[in-house]
Image (tube, rainbow, N blue to C red):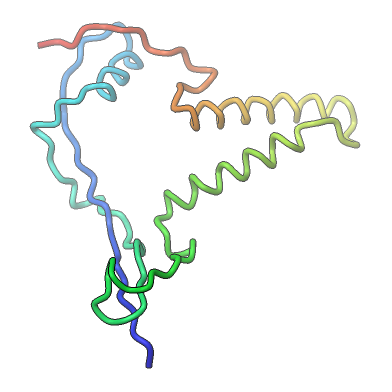
Amino acid sequence: MPRFTIETTYRIPYYRQHTYEAATFAQACRLAIDDEDWEDELPDYECVGPTYVTGIWKGGNSAYEGEEIDVPSHFDETAHRMISHFHELLEQLDHIARPTSLPTAEFDRWLTQARTAVEKARAIIDERPDPDQPAAGSVQESS
């Protein structure tokens, strides 16, 4: 019977709690995201992610040495699968967000929502704030 070496992974999130001085909570959130000081990080074992496959090789004990097999997407990390599929869905939505046989009023309502969804998706891909959310300005961290 064939043997395979399978590498699996799970993620353990880490968290920290810092206090920031800012004019708005959105600005405080931006400060927290941009803060690179993780000296007091703690693992969050209660929120461990599901196990997923990160590598497959033919043969026993052959990780990174044997013949590598592509990991089928359904064994990939769920968040990664969602992100990959998100791009495809965005392209589909962007492509069909053109006039169709819908009544004009219904199409105009749908098109506005579709364009908003496309703008938000592009902002997510570009790692920008949502179009309907102002970018947080620069403020100083409290000591």
